[in-house]
Length: 186
Picture 1 (tube, helix red, strand yellow):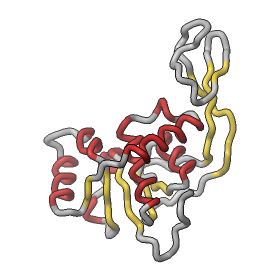
Picture 2: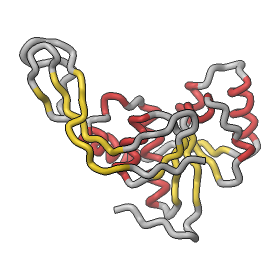
Picture 3: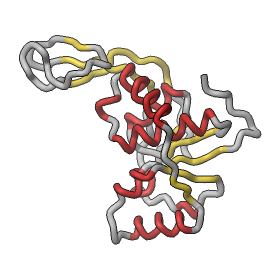
């Protein structure tokens, strides 16, 4: 269970690649900031964004941290239960695991991202998110997977990507809305 943040809980910003690509300046944020090593790999080399990111990490403004395997596995399980696992990249999974780990350490993490799947899983985990270039998700969704050819339905955590009957690639659609989401826009 996630500890309930209080006014005295230190807030920490967890940066997704989309936040940096949207033009977020790490030097304009007063709170502590962190991200995962894969974010740096997703930034185009020899770009102004890369230069800004490297400067921020070299000056200690952004700390790079690898989440533990325990939290990575927990995030994979939770994302599978609601049907977002197949849309999360390894970077996305690491960001969510890092935020969950920081929450367990007594921080109040906020993931800055425009990725809807990250936002959906973060909501499921009880972690706040801040969208930059989008409005963010409005509802926490649970997905179902289905075959568009033969209409067979699969649970959101089914291990197959193709229909077991006809071999067509599976698609997904909302199975139900779990609850409305309150976003924390800057």
